[in-house]
Length: 240
Image 1: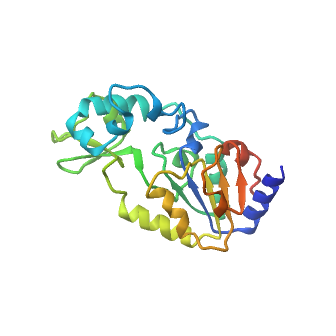
Image 2: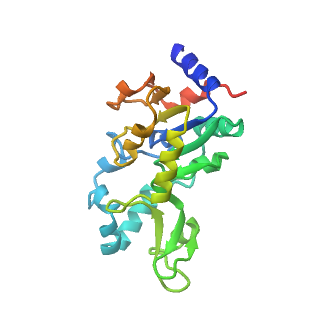
């Protein structure tokens, strides 16, 4: 409880909070993570999961890619949890400047948040590889291999292995973190590069909070470490 009190005090004292989150934010909404013992990458599949979600695999075995993508990476029944909802309340109160997320599920926007920087893209945006036309998620779900009205293949706007992050999103994320007066890092193992390196842009001397069920190895950087499910932590935070 002392940790929650400390977190509440830091939030109360801050007006430019940035939240940097990973898969642990979405697991409490029923979306599995990738790297835990029960994560997607540890499931037995015909091809290694990390191979399937790669740029080269998408083009070489498109049918198999979409089979995996629809089954393992799209969760239509998922709803925002206490973390998503409370972050929206903080943004609504003018205390949260930005959410930087590694998740592709769109749950932050579903909760109402506006300034969401999606480092790895989103399942809700897709584009034609020929004409560039954009489509929503429904186009991906309506056939084995989605195609545009022009005949071109439609590709999800998610960052696959072998692909670079969107430079604009990356730069905006760095800028938001640089200008934050409180950085809360939650639900991430801080193992995925280059996203994991973003915390090093946060100015030294400003408070850094780390919330995760497991240790990340970056605890030495934090002023406050809370080893607990992030939804439970945020459920106890009050927003005036």
